[in-house]
Image (cartoon, rainbow, N blue to C red):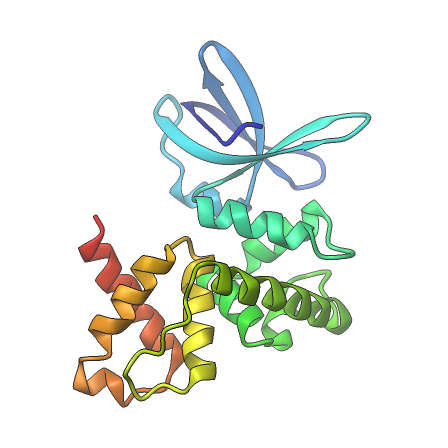
Length: 211
């Protein structure tokens, strides 16, 4: 319903539950937006403007706005709360404990040990997150049309993991395919099977190419 808010930072508050609330003024209306605590470090000074991507949760007794620094983070939050047993606060905790790329890769690689670093996430919960969300990311990859095999030293499984991670980080299927096609021509990288290195190089290339 509310995709994003663009306005002036009025205040940043911590409530009794250690939840961080951003008070944002937009068109003379002050919105209370719960944000991921790590987002505090990137907020502008009070009185300056900012754009925050939002998710509105509507319950019988209240409405809560959650704010994120990027569309990819907001969309991953929505995916997380769709998992059985994962509420909004646990999803916020996951996004706060792990960097976005690290969190997505942990899901794609089914790395439950990394997911379990988050307070409140036990082994069974981590397994459920990895299983349910990896399945959704795989479907997302198919819907994006990423079915062409890139000529590189990557196995199909590794390439799929790279593609799913980049899609979850907000890149389009077309952008991902272009990046992998270009990077596969780099001799030094083509022999590199590390998903982390491919993802880092793809992000750098796309940042320069799709400004």
